Image 1 (tube, rainbow, N blue to C red):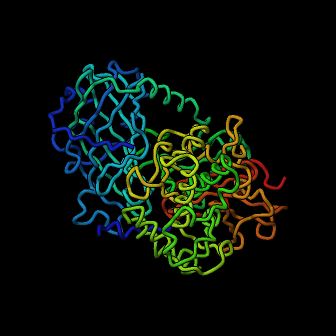
Image 2 (cartoon, rainbow, N blue to C red):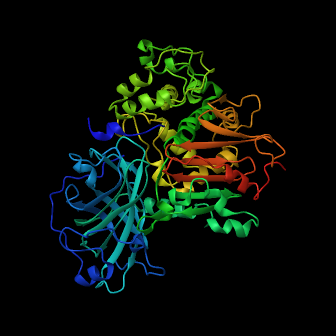
Image 3 (tube, rainbow, N blue to C red):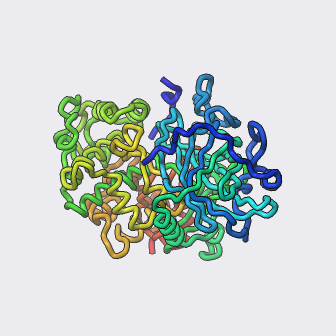
Length: 582
C-alpha cells in the first residue's frame, strides 16, 4: 500500500493522449527574455513570483487566436519539487510520481483575451497520485515578444484519494502554429497535511484546429463571468458598514492560515485572501478550494431537498435497505434506517459514540477502497447500537450511504442512467449560476467518472460558488429565478427555521446537526451582549473550512488548512453589519 494510507483525515474525459513526443517550436529568444518563462534545458531552479502569470493591466488582445490542443511532454520526470510540510512522508523515497505532474493534454478555445478549456472541473487522469482541474485563463499580446502572443491559465492538482487542492499556473508563448516551452508552478494549497512547491519548464506541442462546440463554450464562459456576484475588497466592509472591524472576522483562525475568505451581505461578496508563497495568485476568481465535508450540505443534503421538490417529501423517508442491497448481509440493521437518518448521522449503527472515534478508525480505509462495492461494505460495517434517529455519531460513510440510496431512488423514477450528482449540478448549481469548474464533476466511489458520487466530500469551490450556495440557503429560501429548487421543508430544518425540528445535539449542547448541516446556538447566558437566543447554521470542512450563514443575513466563509474552526468573533463582528437581535 502506498503512503496514502497514512492520510491524517478526520472528516469526464481523461486529459491524456497517446501522442509521440515531438520537438516543440520554441518562441524566439526575445520572448524568453521578456517573460522569463521559457528557460532552456530542464527548467528554472525555483518558482517565479505568481504575478508573472497575470495579464498586464491594459494589455491588448493577442494577435493570434489559440484554438486546438496543448500537449506537454516530460511531465513524469522533469521539474523541481520542494516539500514544505509532509509529516506522513507522502513524497518519501519510492513516491517519485507525486513530485511530478500527470500527463496533460488540454483543448482550449481563445476568445479575445480569454483562454477557455473545453473541459473544466475535476478530471480523472489515471495517474497514481494526481487528478487535475484546469480553469479559464487569459491571453494577450506582449510587447517585445517578437510578434508572439502569450497565454496563461490556472490549474490544480487534486490527490486521487482525498479532497485537497494544490493550485498552480502555467504560461507559454504561441503563434498561429507553434508554441514555446510551458512554464508551470504549484505554490499554494488548501491541504493540512501536505504542502509543497512544484515548478518546471516543459516541451510542448500545439495542434491548431476548430474545437467542436467552440461557440457554445465561448457563450457559456461569457455568461459565467457576467453572472458572478458583485465583489468588493474585504477591507471595504469598514467603509460600507461603519463600525465594522474587518480584521475581527479573520482573527481567530489567523490571516496567515487562510487561503481565501469573504463576507456575503445583500448580494455583495466582500473577498479577501488569494495569497501564495510566491506572491498574489494571478487567477483569484478561479482559484479552487476543496469542499471536504461542506459537500455533506451542498451535495448530499441538496440532493435530498431537490428530490423532495421533484417527487415529494417521501424521498427523505426512503429506507436505505430498499436501495442498497448489500444491507442484507451487513452486521447492523438498516431496514428501519432512512435517508434522512443517514443525513443526520443518526443511523443507530456505530461502534463508539465518542466524537470522531469511528471516523478516525474507518475513514481512511473507506477512501482508499478502489471500488463502489468495497466502499459500500466498509460503510455498512457497524453494529446496531441505538434506535435510528436518537444518537448522533459522525460518519462520512453515512452520507455516502444516503447518497447511494438517493441515486437508487432517482434511477427508479428517472431511468437507469440517471446520476444524482448530475441532477444536483443541472437542477441546482446551474440555475444559481455556479462555475463550470464545480458543475462538471465530483469525487466518485471508484476514483473514475462512472461510480456514484461520494457525497460526503468531493466538490471544488471558488469564492463565487460558495457565496452563491450560501445565498440560496440563507437569503433566497431555496429559490432562483422565481423557481423553487430546494424543497422548503428540509431546507428550513437544516437552516434552523423549524422550531419543531432543531436536529440532534452533538458532543456539545450548543452545537446541533440537522440534514447535513451544523448549527451553533448563541444564548444571552453564554453571550451577554445579546438579548435573544439565535442559531447560526454552517457548513464545515476538514482542516478548517467554514461557511457560517447567520440569521441576520450575513454569511462569513473561509478556507484554511491549520485546523481553525473558531469564528465566534466573526459572529460578533457581523452584529455591527446587522444586529442579530433586532
